[in-house]
Length: 191
Image (tube, rainbow, N blue to C red):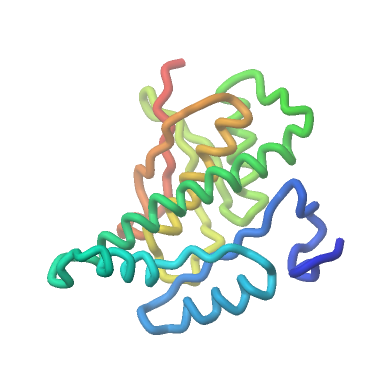
């Protein structure tokens, strides 16, 4: 494998599974600086809250308003979209034929297995009319928990399920970022 960041990509085929790098930490810890260096070195796009907040302020929103919160909500939405695209690419590597899974349950199990392979230690659970993916371990566990990171996870689930089964509406049911013990992405479905 050649190209920017090839030494960091491991053995996965970069054409089928893109590289996703997430930085998280406390304010002024240097996340943006590190993201810029890594992103430029690897040729990756950078999603950062700082320019979003600057754009909100330049649009004339009063700085007394919660512009930081608004910027994080925008970043969360954008992160979910990044996760969706990443999830679709992951699913394509699972199902190169493009035929997808035959049932919702088998697709959900394939998603949990793929997340586990990426460090999430995920499994499926049933509760009422919902089937959920429970992540007992998060590959970002050493970082500051953030709803933006949870949005990437939710997007990955949504993207993989869309490619392997069809459109679904995964929701974050619990999250370490909100103080919960585990991260649960629920997928409401009528079976």
